[in-house]
Image: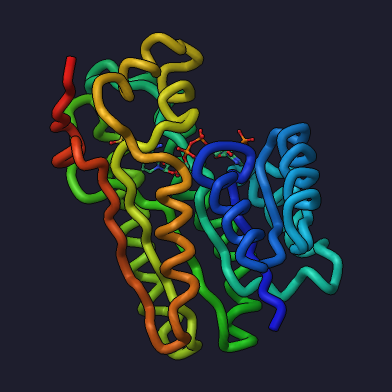
Length: 253
Ligand code: NDP
Ligand code: 8X3
């Protein structure tokens, strides 16, 4: 039977790898993000490599009207979304609270918490009506503990943990599964975004050990969504072997 997955933040990193993996496994995928050129590029790649159908939506998860319009205007044959992967997110800055940059805080809170809520608010009523669906939220090791200078990002990921628990309770009568996938350090554009384009600083984050790859996390997402319908994998924590928690790494340099 045809299954449709909508993945937010598919223009880079985890979202891109998850979209490719789900397409490879036969899911039709709706890929979303703000960078249109990257969406077009991924659309072409999926069409060349896989039989699955692909549809792109370009919107900013922070703007409710954009989210609502993009998703409600989907063509009829794309409306019945089976799997929602709430992946779009970011860290901006690494500063002590007393020196925090207000705009950085707003971007993290608006994207990681409010954006996830906006997309879920638009997609979930269809799942409830069909009494079927699976929501996968990208949490983080940063949602399981806190590290110095990362309080606001960590708070947003603690919020994802709370929202995942709450969604599970509210959607319990409707046969909807909710999975939180919590990665440790994954080598993506995450640190480049956090350090506002400073490539040298971003590279240092992944230097001296084997960080996870986006494909490692796509594996975890596929594991969760491919379980039999009566099995909900509620929470998956995936760490590099060389990372013990949010702040403790074993580096060979
Ligand atoms: P990337 O920076 O590589 O990708 C982030 C994605 O989010 C991009 O596709 C970007 O698309 C999208 N995005 C960001 N802001 C918005 C917005 N306002 N509207 C729409 N889309 C947006 O980072 P990752 O792939 O690493 O991060 C993906 C998720 O995984 C995040 O939620 C992150 O917190 C989480 N995570 C990452 C870890 C890591 O170490 N990399 C570890 C744990 C969790 P575009 O810019 O085109 O809009
Ligand atoms: C991303 C992982 O530890 O850099 O959520 O915050 S971490």
